[in-house]
Amino acid sequence: MNIDNYLDRIHAIRKDELNLVYLSHLQKQHVLNVHFENLDIMNKKPLSLSPEILYKKMVLDQHGGVCYELNGLFFHLLKELGFSAYLMAGTVHKGDGNWALENGHLFIIVPLEDNEYLVDVGFGGNCPRLPVPISGEEVIDSDGNYRVKRDEAQPFFYLQKKTDDEWETQYRFESPSDKWNLDTIYPVCVLTETSPESKFNKMYFLSRVTEEGRITLVGNTLIIVKGREKTKVKLEEYEIAEKVQRYFQLKL
Image (cartoon, rainbow, N blue to C red; front, side, top):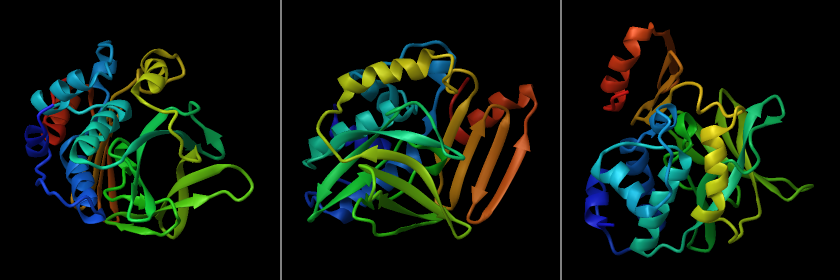
């Protein structure tokens, strides 16, 4: 993996300082420039979590990916730069107390400056732009605040996002451990591709983070968030390919 090419891909600079400022810079540049998308899954192309193949797909070929690919490759970049990062799996909250596939989401924990930070570049439309300390402090983002809340009764942490004065749980995870890597998460990745219960093999899911908000395509619905403003547009079938090209620079 060519680190300089990777940094060019995300329009990031190279620094020797392994601090929160630089980690924040890398995370923000990654989510701004490498988008969440499930086109390979929709096209029945099996995913690979090999770092070499991920590098070719997202850096050389300028595609995006799903959480296993995005956070998997970003994890390798952080390690190459010298951060002591490790991978974690979490369970996505579907709303109304319902949860998606157990440990179906991959993200990163980075110990730094006497704290540990949740770092995620693969959560689509609700992906934080900045590291979120798991000690509970709020992080201010452009379209909402983030925090990690610890459950005092159960061994869970919850990533939460605050919009309209309410905290919404995005996903949960157990105490950080070293059991997750790209090999142990791969069977879950395969389920995401193939399971009848997976939503990612049934409709298009593309999302990009912008300086002011998000742009997301779910099925035939285009959602544009700019600050506190949100618009939704239903697309005709013939319009989808053009919107994917315009907003995500990708071809169906």
